[in-house]
Length: 296
Image (cartoon, rainbow, N blue to C red):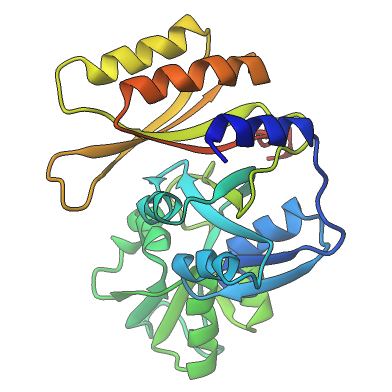
């Protein structure tokens, strides 16, 4: 089935509803921001499956053991999470929704530890980046990247060593019985991570307002300018553009674009063929409801 036929079918079946007991894979473990995003989006229903890596989430969908995946795609302080963009391109799955989570990092350690005993700190690289100002005050600490903030907290709890600490949520500290040595250590107090909900199938839930696409352009002057102009003609608002290098094609890029506006089936049916004609490659990533900002 070609893309326009798939879109027509999805529109004819919309709005779709979530299954009663969906199987949801997320990156992390109990106490992670990914679990929080999953619980919020699916309103506590369904069965959650923690995964160690982002790739594991996609593989859970690929093997049919999960109906949806929940993955962080960008942070308001440190920007896009490039690995997730690369995996979206690789697996060709769809974004069906989004969720935002307020990030409040804490330095967690076993009972008996204090700031003077710490020698090693475990967290996801994003946790380190978002807490860099705090970490700069303790240059003697060795920061060790780990799969996920909460998985790092679980590891520190298991080791029960006062020389070890983790950067994770306060909830992770409560779950793994760790002390909070420092609270709100991220450098931005308005730190938010945006998560996307992915599916093997193209689905449109109620009131979709945001479209995500990806495309590769011919390497010639004005190619990107021409594409950007198309969105203006259709009175669409580009709310994000991201580029990722193409493997085995030096200095060539895959562009990921999100846009909003007065979007209808007719809009997409007219817009997409124009972009496809100008692009060497085109991928439709999803049409889904934007997160309600009043909830943050």
